[in-house]
Length: 590
Image (cartoon, rainbow, N blue to C red; front, side, top):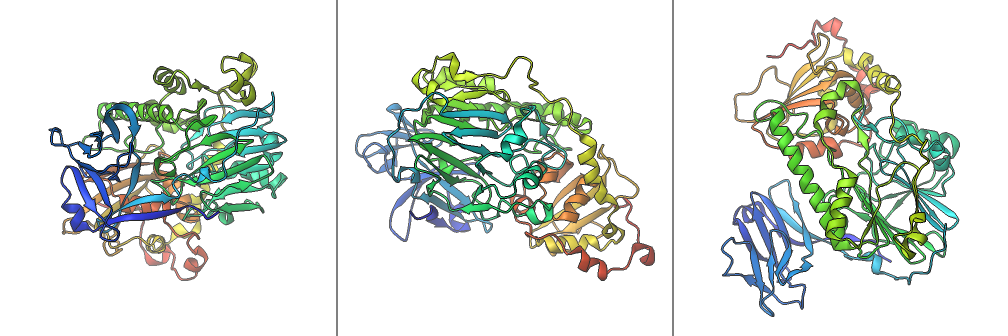
């Protein structure tokens, strides 16, 4: 079976994108003559094939639609609202399959479809009856789930100790006392992506010391999931990188398939597990798993739900970013996410749904502001909404150590024996996190010899490889309260020509001011880490003028930095210490 690929159906250059009008646009491919519908709204785009899902008729502009959002099928007059991809006539009939809209750096766009769109349909299996105790789903913490499938145990995304995103995220739930032992005794492990709340090096260090040869499966993302393993010094010897959309047969009854994310194919993946014809779908953090095409009527579906996994807008200051504006924005975004997840679950109609992968807390005392403002959705609220929209779907809000017996749940969803909750004495929420151990490791980078030489700045950003972009960034090293410190660096980087001026240039340019906690920033620089540790980990504060998101810049520093860290050994051989040059490094820029 060939691996799944992303197929480009239509390409538009920047000029053609600029000519798209607000609302509905019909565009024909010059290569095969096929027609596509692109809906534009404030520079956001949605797209689909010009083909009615009912009987394949072509759509035309709906002259009765005054809002410019619907198209009408020429066969049976079915109407599609392209802004929502819902059919409005007849209502509640279908959702139109969306195409991925990929924006290009030069201002063009591509419409992309995964091929095949539904690879799980290859070699379908009739479900066999499950015995009591044969398939168990055990929730550990955050995104870590253990599947018992017959005699095999399959573990997902084990984050069981330490922080994620430098020191910004900590586990909300206390993992079961035997969680690490069960991890080390698992038969196979799936890690969905490289983010440290899923790929936890403190957790994997324990695994490597006790069982380095356990099979660990990851998808073949363009940035390797384990790109950092050499620098981490965690020695795992059996990492298996798999193509997308191909069944991996473990034994006669168990197989699984890894799928890519439509929005972040360079990084995110999700998984379908099939045991005796019973499917478990785990979409993890994917924004549009498998480009939005997913199997219906699976036995168990799991997905994220909480929101809050970004520095925006909590870490932004200046301009409109008052606490009241942030609170209103966050409330609206979480509500949209809740409704999206509930609608998705309703459309897929799984037998059982479990929200997970959102159980983190900004526990460090220095991040109290983030903890207080970064409101997250609750699993209970999402499940209540699903129960209202689709009462036939059984929902499960898990606690650490809770077990779902799939065989019992499928036979009788009301059977209370299908779910075993942890004993009343079990600890549910963590109340200690070994802060000092991990924060001190980050702060150890502050005294590194490389920072005695001001030239590290040029060396680092040259290594990073981002330029030819009209953006000037001021980077300020700060203490934990984001206040300037006397021995911290404060410098400008002009990414148009990768220069390091002492003041902002006279030409028109975009400007970012980023205050970074010194320990985290220097650790990131020293080890060649991605800036997710700073941005998603709430370890910086950001101001921007004008107030626009620089996708190209952030994508580079969050996902496209070189795979090997800067060669600091080579750097130190060629530099002169500051004490010999007379140059200072204090917060001195004006």
